[in-house]
Structures are given as C-alpha cells and as structure tokens.
Image 1 (cartoon, rainbow, N blue to C red):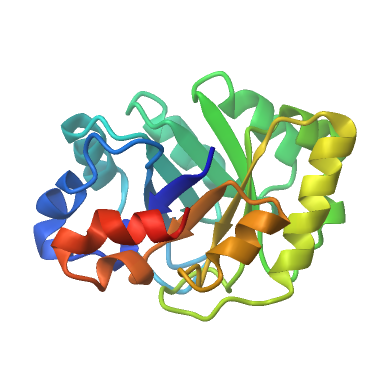
Image 2 (tube, helix red, strand yellow; image 1 turned 135 degrees about the vertical axis):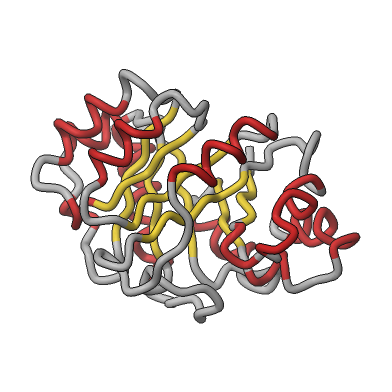
Length: 216
C-alpha cells in the first residue's frame, strides 16, 4: 500500500472546494491538512472552522498535521470532526506517550512527527508500539516548496528497520520536497505514505490524479 496525501497548503485557497473534489473516489489518497499556529512554526494557516467544513463536505480520509505549540487543545477541539488521522510533533509535547494514548480514544489513526534535526532515537519503544503513523519531516516545517533534505532517507531506513525487527505496524509518512524524481528512493527506503503539495497543485487541475500516480 502506498498512500499519497496531497497537501492543500499548496492548493488554490479561493477555490478550495473544487480543488479537493478532484480527489474524490480515488483509492489510497488522503488529504493532508497542515495546521500551523504562527508559534510552533512561523507561518499561519487555517483553523478548526475550516477543517470542520472540509470534513463535513468530503468522504476523503482527512490527515491533520498539527504544527502547533498546544496539540492537545487542537485534538480535543477536533475529535468529533471525523478526521481519519491526526499527527502532532514530538517537539511540542512534554509527554508524547500520554498524548498518543489519549488521542487514540478519539481518532482512528494517530501519528507523531519529527523535525529534520530530531533523531529517531527520541521515539521510545512504547511510543512506536502504539503509533499508527510516523511523519518524517524532510524539510523544516512551516513553509511549502522547500527542497528535500537527503539525510531524511537514513531516518526512513531506520524506522523501517525498527518496524520490521519489532513487528510494529506504523506507516512511515514523508513530507517535504517529495516529487516524482525522488519518490522511488523514498519508497524503497521504507516509506508508504507520501505527502506532496507543490508537486501536485502547481500542475493543471486535470493532471492532479496523474501526478499522484507518478509518486507511487
């Protein structure tokens, strides 16, 4: 299974409904929602009212990526929206294991994200056992259109090895600079969920699904 998660951070926000509609009915496609608070990261995107409307409007699995300094508050606010996956940053939380456990009471899938400078070793075995997804940031979070950091491949390989050696079931998601010309090496390293924003949405709308397939 290779899931592709187009990030609406790069879509035409004045036509967000029609942009997302292009992906309805597509197999193994999630919509990636980058939620930034202007504190944890310098940029600011959309908040709960927009996310609620998106979730109510579409049947596509919604994948919320919390780039916020208070992830627990956001998780509590959105627990009834129908989100499929919610991911928070280990760097924003004092007790990640506790938050994972609490989030799993309300969300079908719970993930944790690590920044480029955060080592895989910060993820404890107790966390890895409970997680449904680990998001490897292959750029510094906060802005779209950045180039892929090559050292991210080593992290993906390490997470894949840990998954195989211990029978963990988490997906390895990669976000940042993912394109057709590097997706193969990313997948071969062990990733099975690729986030792409600019690479998808900078194309003509009638090519979105074709572009998604180039990432598989």
